[in-house]
Length: 86
Image 1: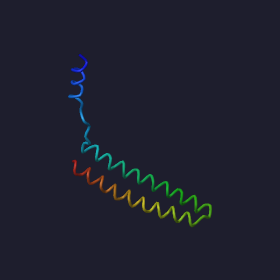
Image 2: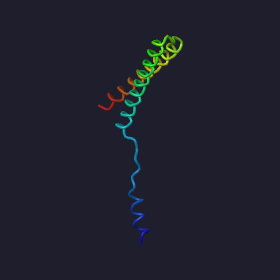
Image 3: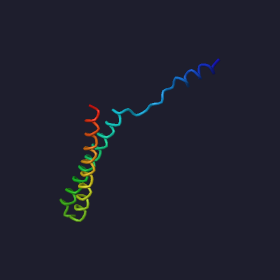
Image 4: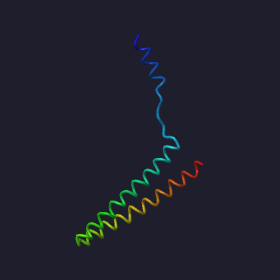
């Protein structure tokens, strides 16, 4: 008696698939993550420079620049996906 009920649930179980809207949100979230990482690196660079550790400050500034470039690329991709969805 339990088996038919189980079969019913197995047959009707939906498999979640990413929608176009979810992929677009993922693209925007990825861009936001890179922007946040760039900001953290900029703060770390400023803190290091404030402590006269210029080598470490330059290292953090270089990382911040790379994260900012990645954020820019992901933002462009996300915006393109948004425009295509309209």
